[in-house]
Amino acid sequence: PNKDYPEGAQVTVDTTGTIKGDVEFDLWGNMASPVLSTLTINNGNFEGNFVVTGLNAEDIQAKVAVNGGAFTDLNNAVKYAKNGATVKLLSHVTQNVSLNGDKDITLDLNGKTLTGYITHYNKGHLTVKNGTVAGTIWVMTSATDESHNKLTVEKTATIGAGGNAVVLTEKSKDANNYGSTIDVYGHLNGNLWVMGNIETDLKTAQHPCIINVNDGAVIN
Image (cartoon, rainbow, N blue to C red; front, top):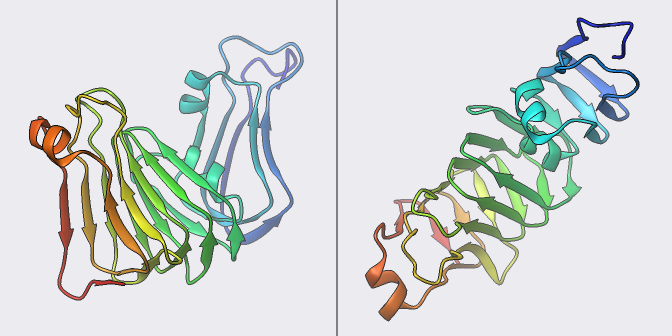
């Protein structure tokens, strides 16, 4: 959109079909200010990269929304997903995924395998189901008391490829920001590792971490 479209362009994708190729949201030229254009994805299968450029972080949050759909570019789909969204993996892919922000996201692996690690950083609730993550899920927090996040591994999910399946860690040496919760119902193919000094960190934490290994869960 540019000066010839002062009202911006509002695009909504809601389809059961497949879009092959990149999806791009890019602002250029003599744009109206403030930005009025929006991109909303409610459903569809997306084979390609999901690219957003030309917007600042505040505009991205306000103008780009992923509410559902299946993607090969899982990282960016999760990045732009709105609170409460379910994002599906369209095919077997090798990619690292980062979830950062105060939002609840369900990652439906759709019977596929994601090869790579997932970083769940700061607040929010990540639920993983229906497939395999052949890598480690890192549950991380920063140096504030507000950063309490949650990971749920459903019965239909397998996490890990040996080594560490799930790692719970935090970045504040004072450890006053623990409060992460991990619920395991599925299969961890590797260690569930809590990083922190038991004598100094975990005992002095204002919000201790909680790990629930539920009936039927498997850790090996």
